[in-house]
Image (tube, rainbow, N blue to C red):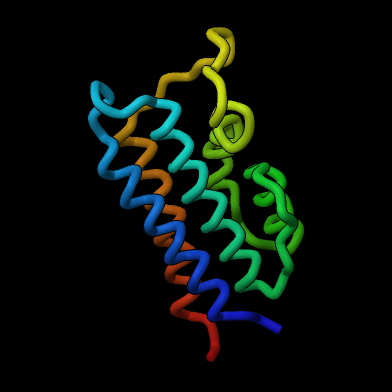
Length: 132
């Protein structure tokens, strides 16, 4: 059974994280680590909303690629979003420590914001098309 209310709640939480990301555009004010953490959270919650819409319980993990693979196993087209999987780095340890220089990856904030926005729009459309 599909829990539309839970999917809607997850997507609303993802949209809150995305609004935070949008407000963190200034790299001179907001650390990249904090920006990427909120982008990761928006992506994770959107993917879990998508899984919920498809009637699949989601695992309590933060690995974005694993969540996308679960969707792909169900026949869902996730390839347009797989480039967001690197954000998984910010779901765990990098919330509490600095990113090691060899793993540091600078991002174009406006491009990343647009990519996460695209995912959330896709999930919002799926939610709106879901039968009541």
